[in-house]
Image 1 (cartoon, rainbow, N blue to C red):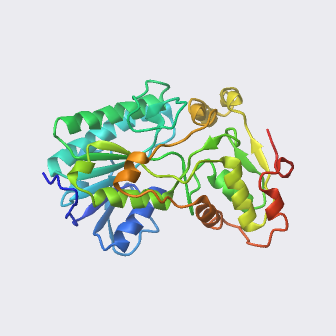
Image 2 (cartoon, rainbow, N blue to C red):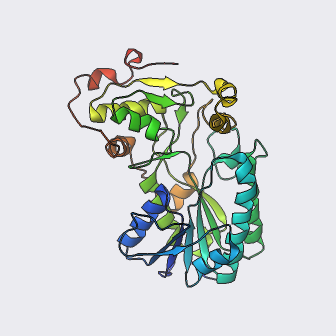
Length: 340
């Protein structure tokens, strides 16, 4: 195995999934002249020229093996229906398939993961925290983390987990500040938040996640078989970020928020909201990410929110930029915002 600090591998990279992080990763790979194969169940309508495509269901072991044939490295960006019941079945199966295929093909893997597996914390989240048994979805993320770590210890795979908190960016709708946040503001409507908008909460910018993926793909094997956290801009509250978006398009900020304690009650009527209740630990207290480890090895200059938020909100329909007469006075003025 190559254990040098630098990596000379420039061969084919298979990217599993083409959501926001997958798309950004493919764009960056192509920009750097890399060969890319995107694999998922259906061909993306916006697949760029230069990227190959192969049909693949990660729950089918043979599909996954075919997807890694001829590749030197892989990036896993997959997601499943946001249901604890579904996750308990599909995530372990998908991980078994990915680990078996990566071992058979001797392919290095960068897995874009979230941070549920740390569970409730009252300090900045760092890589050395123990895995949680809390809840359903957090416990599932812990289970699949143990799976790849065991395979890594046994020398079966070279695997790097790149963990990010909630993310945002241009075209990112499924985010706490996505369609119902910045997207609503772009249309002149109130932002809808499922949690307290006034708690400090870390957000990662999607292009920064893709940049971090590239850093790992270009690193030596010594960067693998461990966890890394994506650098984020200094933590702000969701309300502050939404205000940046509103100012960027010249709209007044209005926020409607559902308190975390009310989610289980509403979940009795709207089952989809029940799925968010167990994750309230990410919003009922300050949520900070410690990316010191990654910053020391690679880079720390995460994209400022002052750059990322305007780019994100202008990607949503009906975002019309116009001068704001109250930009200077509205920054932290509670009278300019709705509270819950």
